[in-house]
Length: 72
Image (cartoon, rainbow, N blue to C red; front, side, top):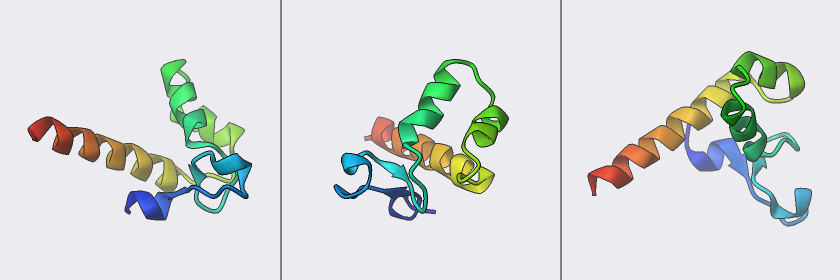
């Protein structure tokens, strides 16, 4: 999945905060959970509108972007 398939940024939705597409859940919420050593399963329990596939794909996409940038 691409970032555009995973993330929605719309000024009319949550003031333009990047959210998981099809939800009102900010992407930052996943990062905050992970930074707090909260397992992804608990994030998914807290935000059931986000699928495990979406969360994992977002992390994979972010990692690929970081690796690509580091290689430049």
